[in-house]
Length: 277
Image (cartoon, rainbow, N blue to C red; front, side):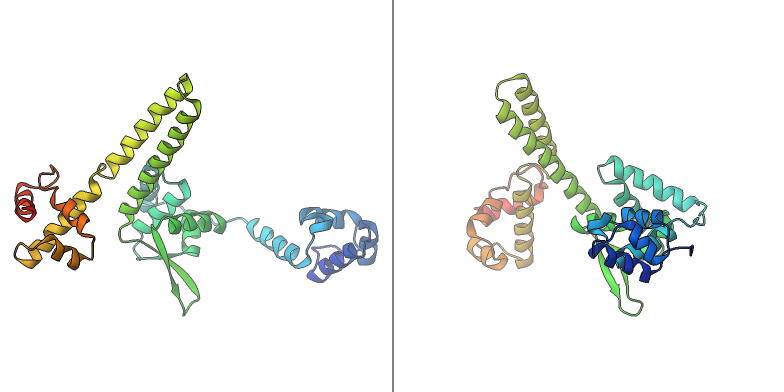
């Protein structure tokens, strides 16, 4: 009987035999292979109903490649720092592999890295890199740039990557707050309900603090309006500012009413107070 690995042609014969309703023994006889070889092949690749010859062939080849001993990379000072950097990000709530990918991108000499370079650098599987890249793209912390000459994808960090990280953390806190508030309403005035209400208040406050508090967006509007007045070089009416910024007039007026906000400097408050008069 022939030995060695099954060929792609043999796998297609196995798929055809299964489709025709032949048993493992009959298929093995036709291929001059041990029945155990056929049964293991089918069991490993989807079973008698899900066996696909080409998929089985490529999957087996992939498993064989993964089984080869890899050449160990000796970590250097840069590697050790990148792992320390990643650990800090993990403590801040970023998934571990996403943090490791981001740390490597941040500490690389090149402004971008390919998936193959990340696989080699981190000594992990392509699937792990792909999953981490998918997460980082989803939250806007990196993007891909194609290289038409080499048919490769280069991964580049967003310029405002740390702002994106902050926003992700803030959204996580809001999710905790919303879920806890839902539980507090469900359990009502009970020990569980009170605990969940306290939890909701805590994470809501934490999210508000990270976002600058409930008035943060209005304060940001106030600074934008202030910049518009300085650009104009004179005090102009709220209607004119609204037209320039393409905002509703009420939004401009709300920003002007913030002339006494503690987050503005005395000179900024004075300028906005004049404009609000």
